[in-house]
Length: 394
Image 1 (cartoon, rainbow, N blue to C red):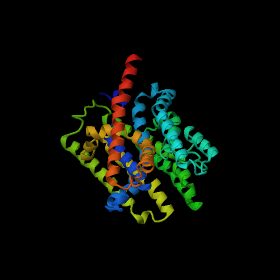
Image 2: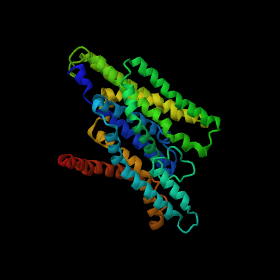
Image 3: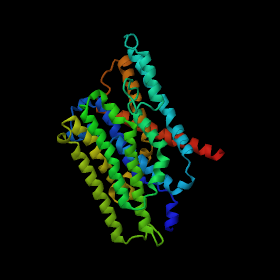
Image 4: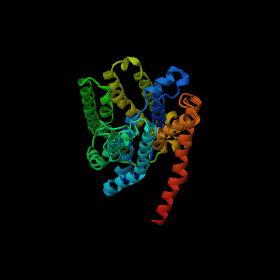
């Protein structure tokens, strides 16, 4: 395989799916703990709650991963890439579930407040419009929070809209040193946004606006695209001027050195992430913001790049069939876990008189198994087969 043919072949990263699953599970547990889950454990063991409550892995990883995965997928076929088809496919893939989860949370809002006199129909209709129009991440102020994770979907679609020019621009960068410069420059809006939040006093009622604001999240997505460009330039440099064969490209010692290096980078990134969760970096709203929204990003990027090489123990663990397949379904649990948990807790409270469903770790474990199990069955038993039938008839 020559350099030219390598550039035309999309790359799939098995180990990346393991990182995606890790982030999904962490975010789900973070939300469940935040609304009262795992209360029976009393915050013990401390290291586990430190990871969950951090959270150690959160939406920023999804945005960087999104930019990285789509850039490495479409860069080799940029000449035939069609933005409209890309947007249509993403919309068909994600919007129906977004619609169902949003309407479900609106129904639960009505059920919980029925007969209390606390139902604000104009506000509910406004909230539905903001969520369903993908505008909620731009301005969540004055709206009900119908499904918290949907802000990420709103922000992600802005990234999808800007993906075509972003990808084409990234491919004009020919030097890895310049890619690194642009990655640093993409950090500046995030830092300035955090300073602005600190300047106005870090008000809690403004947090969701600053946390999910789509134009700022776009720069995280852009970092993923630039990271992909860095990866592509490294690959083409490695294979330039000689045939490429993965099995014989490097000597035995070299291959093992790469594996050890990737494991070392991954381990260091994970240790620094855990260290960054300590209270000394989060004892004020300003420190918490930068610890969460800025410091984590280079650590996530290092972990993603190391995983993309697919060498070492971590990569083998993340690439095991069960983890890889669950990782590919991880966005569904992310989007549906709050509506599903809300339905279960409402049923337990109103019908069974059981008000501690979230408190028990056994209940949470069963819920997680059901959540990810159902997502797995949907993707591999329903969605993929439906796609196969469509492709066969199309």
